[in-house]
Length: 441
Image (cartoon, rainbow, N blue to C red; front, side, top):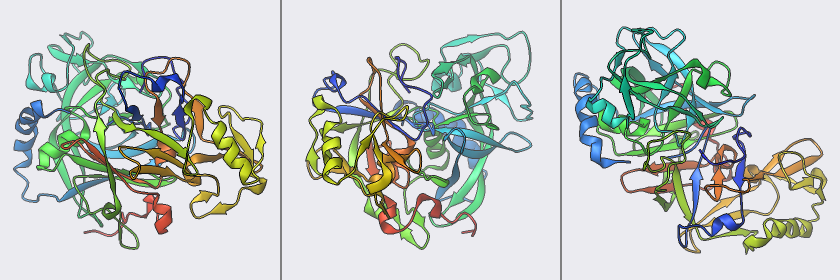
């Protein structure tokens, strides 16, 4: 998320773009694109992995079953367009719903309301858990003891990346469980007995979908979900995410990632390096902390395979549309570039409009965005380009949100710092909703 003024709270179904002087940034020849999904989006650190192994793995050694991979379901809230997932937490187990934050640092949940668990333990001041969580404070709470309010506990500032706000939070650990998988079907439920997270106040839920109790972060962070699960189960530090307009899926560890009727989407990935932004983009962060979000280097942008002159923003898109007899009409907020749907033909890849290519490390490596991910149908008569202005002072050039990622498999390899991405799965006549959650492995 951005901490500078920006267009926020817009649907997660947009690319938030500022294709202008922001490209002349201090990052030399690379334009850094953070994956920011609120969902949400943002994807470190080997230094503390040994601590994580010590505090999480011993509890798992009691389990005779070692999973190959883990899997969690994703759904899209129709009201907020946020992407949600579920996880079992606490003793006894409670199935909680949380917003997926691809660039978030960790799981945070509301502990002010109805948090009851016999296995809840606050992280004590000076402990390794506090160091892992990047705790920036320590003290007492005089309204407890209770989850979220304990003496001699360490504090962080969990952030709501939808509203770009932060609040006080207590670092804690509790039991968490989720399903294993062989990459094709769900398997047995496995447990992390001392999963680190943060307790947050109820007020931090503002702007989130109804019924959720927090946000779960998949970012480059020491206690992000991927980091904790990889340490707990000796996985490779990888996870993959596949969103759709209905249901999707997140995998932890390597492939296969098989979708009905038997298509392994991991076999068709293209790879590009991930970069670290040394400046945090979180709503609240300790001084000097790098961003937990994921950034890729983009050398140029093409529309219909023709380079876009960036100082003319989207004019090239207009001319390409005109060549296809697609008529531009007045913008529909928050979109500025809209077209009559009359001459836009529907295809398996969405609206038949010029494709958009993000050219990466070389001319042969590009991320192609088709109409299904570039055009938003705002009415039966009008479709708009899913780009909005990022504001006059953006911290990053372009933010790619959930709509552009739907039905595209993304694999984040934190160990080698690279992103794998597929072309749209629609071209293979499958979607991200095609993972089989019903049959057991």
